[in-house]
Length: 158
Image (tube, rainbow, N blue to C red; front, side, top):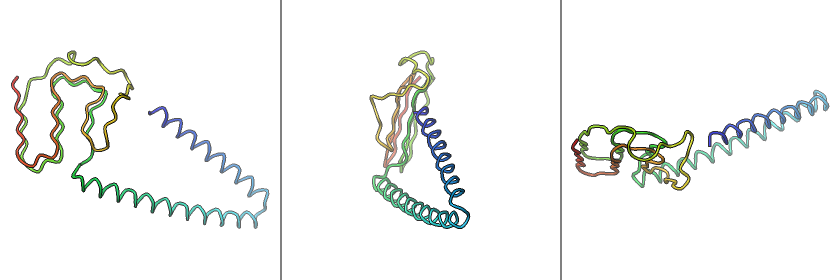
């Protein structure tokens, strides 16, 4: 995933550089008066395209935010590619009291096999806003609390 982003970044940088060079050569060959006219037209079109993309992004973000607030879900919580010696506790959307008792941590060597560096679990894709523990080694238990309207008390002994 990170490697794809780096490749995309460099593709955008190189493409932008190529476009700037071609436009520079076009403006140089056209002469000062024609280059000024071309630059004005290109600037106006770029401004209109940027305005359209900005409005589109604001509308999409607004509809995404309102649909998320209608669901009553907060942002997602994810533990991925980690080694946890004790419990993993994820709590969100709680409108009442939450009390989770302590437990003594287990050695980090127990549990699932250690995830490889940069390894991503392709078999499970959590939906946006979900609580998930993916490709991780957890020594004890995973506790997830979501949208509790009253008291949620989880107490574990050592």
